[in-house]
Length: 294
Ligand SMILES: N[C@@H](CCC(=O)N[C@@H](CS)C(=O)NCC(=O)O)C(=O)O
Image (cartoon, rainbow, N blue to C red; front, side, top):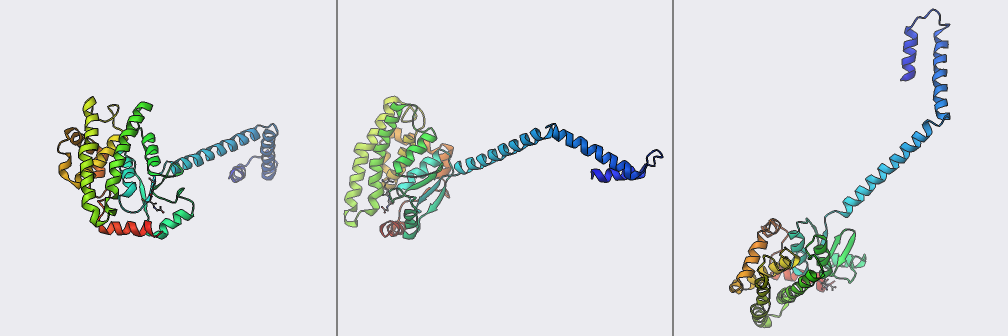
């Protein structure tokens, strides 16, 4: 382009003193080239070029780091069958924390075996959650991580101890309700009666007492924690079992309403969310097929 411009200028100029257009062009070419070479020789260009290359490398590595961060910060992926089971409390906690998540459903023994064989499951069991570059298993460990990450695990060791105590109580009653569908039909009534009795006389009074003792809106530290979320999830299951069970626990009812009205929880409670319905016979058969024959 530059040479073409020189040629055009030189050809249109009719300068009598100029020996010839060709010579004049050669002279200009020589002068420019020498000037360019001397700049290179004087090391004026090389350091600049090197600096630019370094900058380019720096920009590229920043871009790569950002891409990596996007992968690391991607949505958690939940691996479980398409039912409540042990994953539902994890779904609840993520949803309440306002975290979007993806689900990869295990639909048959092959899907589970694939995860087992590729080393994704430390103890050959699900739930498994891919999060922040980890493949986490063990329900409680997963809940602990999410609660810590999203600031739902108290402000100090004492608050965490209380939260642990309450969530372990929730887990004890929750486990009884979780395993109820697996109960043989002839033992079912007795099991339901036992769960209702323990709910009414042991677990619900304990949580009502905690709320009454400090008169605050939430179980620990006057602030929403995983304990409130996990307890409210349990209260929904207790009510599914028998809607009258909460009747004598006004503070628990109020907590349930309060937590249910948090925008994130409200959204999760709406139809079409990733919340799973109660286990029916069909789901139970599906779970049996996946977990019992793998
Ligand atoms: N302690 C584990 C228990 C997990 C567990 O029992 N998972 C069952 C499904 S709910 C499973 O993967 N069963 C298949 C197997 O044990 O091979 C946890 O809480 O995550």
